[in-house]
Length: 243
Ligand SMILES: [Zn+2]
Ligand SMILES: [Zn+2]
Image 1 (cartoon, rainbow, N blue to C red):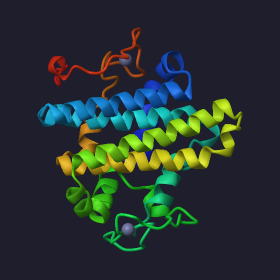
Image 2 (image 1 turned 180 degrees about the horizontal axis):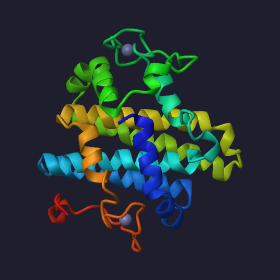
Image 3 (image 1 turned 60 degrees about the horizontal axis):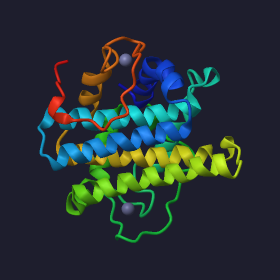
């Protein structure tokens, strides 16, 4: 399924829940942060593929939850979502830093050159195509870096998102003034999540559809009708992948 379709599925599943339980941008960023902590925990405790697949799929779902705060807009229906556009501009066919494919960046790289226009074909890419693309560009380097480094990079992206959210609330910056920046940070968060899934050998699109295709992970309804919200970090020992 295309990235946009997966996201729209997620929007229709969780928009109501998000409004009720996660009304603010910062709630949603915290919620995303929790899912990354849960993945780190599952990796550290060496849980199996079912748990790891679920853990990475939850991160994608919560990236969409942040995106939903901004871009679940009726006037954009049918058009490419700003988050998808940002992902295409930040991750074109060649590395946006060194211009190579695969990437040949050194550890300290120069400023990225954002593509001026989003490649229309890439806008239609499935999540599986995105995984293959990013693994081709960055997979070898990521495997050298190791999972811990990649998790750190993903946490760092969340810090950057938090900083933008603080600017909106403290500096009274209008959110549309930094929407582009937010979309790009969110694209980076997705790229690191994909990178981690690839290194773990998980098919992220399958993992996501396994978890969310039929409805909410918890109440199994579409849209979600959960009346209770779980803020606690996940205890993977009690997690049942067939439930
Ligand atoms: Zn590069
Ligand atoms: Zn639910």
